[in-house]
Amino acid sequence: MDYSKSGNPKGARSTLRGPDHAQKGAPKAVKPPRETQEQLLARMKAAAAAKKGDKA
Image 1 (cartoon, rainbow, N blue to C red):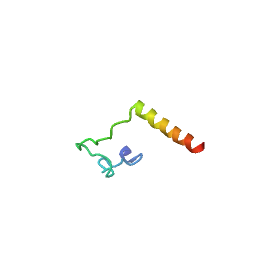
Image 2: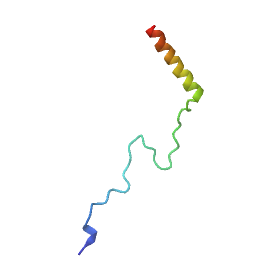
Image 3: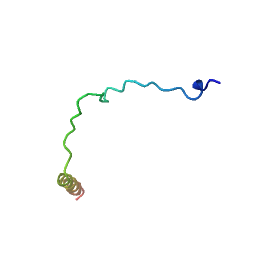
Image 4: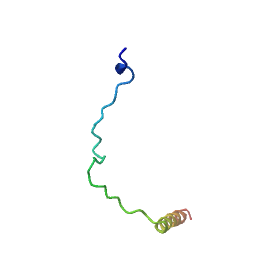
């Protein structure tokens, strides 16, 4: 019996990914710097104050 033909077919090994996926050897993507905790709190407090000011 030929067991090599049993089971699911094997997928393609070297399929190209989408245009937004970095290929091997490509330069690393430059991400914007993360927001610090103080900046986040200041932004949240400003949004809360603006929302509170609109209600009153």
